[in-house]
Image 1 (cartoon, rainbow over the protein chains, first blue to last red):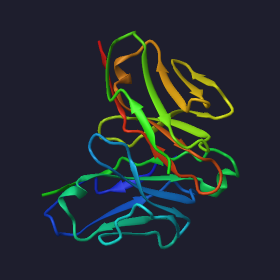
Image 2: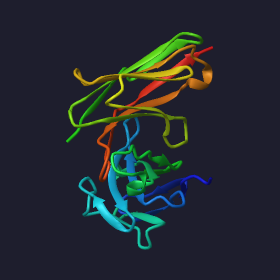
Image 3: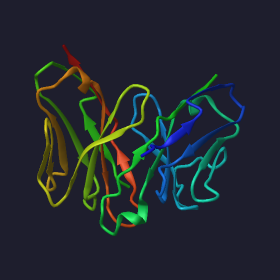
Image 4: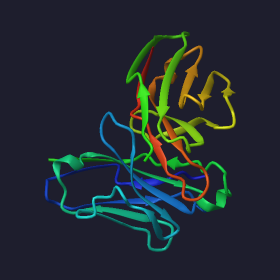
Length: 119
Length: 113
């Protein structure tokens, strides 16, 4: 079974530039997550999709970050304009979501991440 | 919201010794506690998990214990090997509905050969 795919793996940009990350979840997974992982910290949830709808974007800096999952499969996360403090690893994860069943643990599977450096 | 604290931030052990990582959580409604291992350049991978109706769970050299009253849970690795060297994250969540996972800050484990 193929895992969660992400691209690019690395990206270096100047501040105020824009950047986009792509994620392809595990086939059949209804829920997709984007996390930001700053060096030395745990992953922080930015946005969570259930199919193509947003269920949690409370920690997404909406003035500069946007994300979409138009067909309920692939997803794109964009930052425009980037700031120095956006330097981090951006992780995508997917899970069965509601397909896991009520009161079932919904295991998340992570991709390798995209390491963003903002200069 | 949920807050998960994790200690220690770094841990060095000799090969063959045991390693223990401890976490606390704040939300008494949390009932699912996964542990993830993150190797350099990779995303976190689930290694073991425990639900609140269980006090302990083992999988070969790895065990997790949960004290629901004290809101503490711990990861125990016995007979450590160099390949156990990685960053370990604990997490807490509530099952059902749109499950949101809150991660701890991570423990960098170094196993010295």
